[in-house]
Image (cartoon, rainbow, N blue to C red):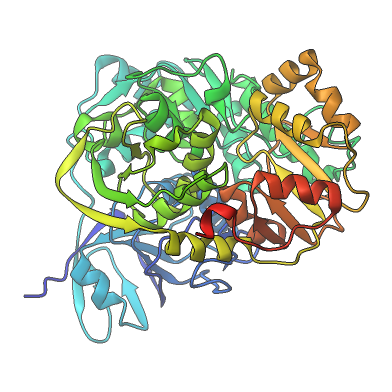
Length: 561
């Protein structure tokens, strides 16, 4: 018997045409905040305008910065009229929640699979406080979930304004998110990582400036993600003040609130990286997945804006993968490991794992004998976070909690034929390479040294730019050991503070038309973010392109057998 039902998560009224996506979508890198159109070239709805629509999706995926994109859309009246999800969703829900602070309404509802299927066959609907109304039927909407949240005396004091208006506002947002997640209490966290410092849209600055002006101060050690400009050098690089100034102001607002200007999307490369079992409050999808999966620390994939709320209070909702029961693998991926793989296998299989487990924690079996390095795992986690909404994964024989598998877990086989198909999709494009992009996420010291060694003192091709993005701490290390000088002698442009997912012209060479990268994450997001052809290649392909200006589209040798 079909049972149609819906629950309000963020209440409100709306009406509009229904846009249906059976595939999740990352709003950051997937939706243009200036137009409200889907720019993810790999998404089935590429080119579709979602402003004013009732957007029906299983969930979101990808970047934590999606909350900022939704807020910007709402502030400029380009947001969907309402969001309806089938599965749990936090990133866009948080964006809609923060929009209420600025008197903008984006109702959020959650429906069961039967209702999701029924709504997928409708052309338009009207949403009231109590119903979803279509021509064919009327679906009752239950009110937002009742609160079971139990606050401590300290929580209540912060909520009541003891520590100032910014902390009180942070606690209100935290409590609202905890309630919709079904959390019964908050948990202490030892450190935070801010993702909202990327100038993805003016909305990020609007929120940060508001909290800083209210006197917000972080109460736990708090690192910052890559920002959108080289903080000290953007003027010399020719970045227009209309972009550089607010991007710097956004970073400065977080520093004013006590955040460390670490400016890296790979905080796990810092000396402050957490240890197994440590409860932290991180944002930035690749960092969250690496922390949970490889380090064994505990953090939800906190959306932008919630990361600051956690840093201001030292508290996070005790839900999701903070709990043992939610860290179990829900899907087993049996991988046919090709012979003689090299580095490009890891972003490829991470990307495919996300496609195979779009909203579940997977266990990857069959790859332990390849003995992935930390940098291999970094590439895998980043690519996985691009195609999946899950906050972690397990790798049998590698990651610290790989024995935690839910009963009756579904198995999916991934073979070399499937790998070839995905590789060919991500590797397609012109042979002539104008730009080689390394460092998404930020490169480690070992990766910087490997690039310098591979170039071996040779100068890059005069028609091809090579740009390496790194964090300030890594830049200091490679400057001290001579690696930075070697890279510069070969003609590599080394850029600190920003990363490929926040880079823009003129740091991104305006004349470049085709980009080659060894990053699965940037191969996916790059076309939508840059408007260029972006190809995934092996590290060897990147070196060949750097020195010759060309890299033919091809299968790696390990996928030819």
